[in-house]
Image 1 (spheres, rainbow, N blue to C red):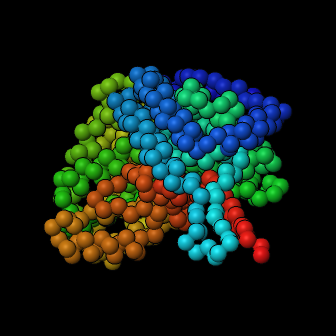
Image 2: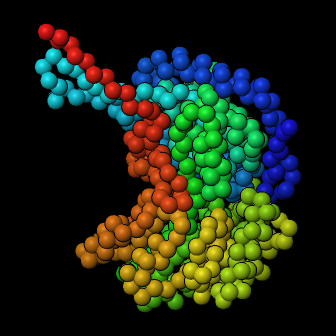
Image 3: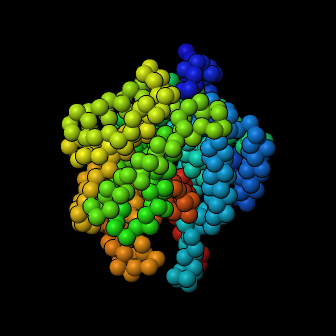
Length: 472
């Protein structure tokens, strides 16, 4: 059996990979388990040095990187270099905190005479990372690098849409000095992925993807023999609230980008906007005019600013969500005529802005994962908070207000920070991951933590050492 990647913009086959047999998969996992035993004995400082060399090795391919990624998943080629910069930036930060994050915790300040106690961070063993296609490098590095730094071996299963990304990561890591077998790319069918999750030698699974995929991973792990950890980074329906005193032009521009970058295909993209009624009409007008400036087309053309979504099926699903909202009373403000590349039967879809929306419509409650936004007026902070929390998701949320000049606005934001049911709460920014902060979600957006020092915690286990040195 095999998988074939279809380029979103051409709908033509790009690359094919053959799946291993079950016996071959068993051998791959055994290799990972064997390699981990020796890798865990490599000093942390040496692992960190290899990590820095990995960044250097990866940067050597930066001229090959943009077009290759664009061909796999459709992001405009002018925008793909940003993922390289983001990935290496995250990697550098994780490397800078690795020694402290993985250091033993001393209890010397409270040890009784004759005793010594400390807690070490022991590696888990074999970590299976299941990565998505929308940001294949950024999402993979969140788990792959800290897992390796902690002394684990890694099996990286990429999306069938972006198989070359994982292979490129593996080559750079091995060129930097990661021993063979410690980091392996595995292309797997759904059945083989379930087998890998349930394998007795796989100790932890880190999954980034859809809610349905997350449920399947968790179910497979629960049904496996023994008990293994699972981290799930799932979907979002991330809200933004624009208060009356927001920096208007800045906020409009940031929210357009937050909603439409990567054709809206980001777990933390802005998917619904609430605007104070006093500036609502002005905001919508400015927002629509900016959206109309996008150039939808061939993502390999450097002048293109909006590419296709990942597949024809995805485009049809998004169009249906919009059509259902319009049928229920919503109003679309963008004419498809100004985006001639948008065509039925293709993965190209015109960006859309909807008003007259409410929470009876899926467009305001269920993840879209496409270039569509609903904008709803609110009369108060209290109404905004209630609507922002009226969601089965809780990944990020953003509030836009002039905290620089109004003390009351900063205080209002802090109330939102306390009250919002989200893993990350932003002030005057959105759709951004800071590697120093814990990346996590609540409700159906998943569980577990990546990035920050807490990301190392879920990829290690605490091991307590209790020494009674003097026995008399």
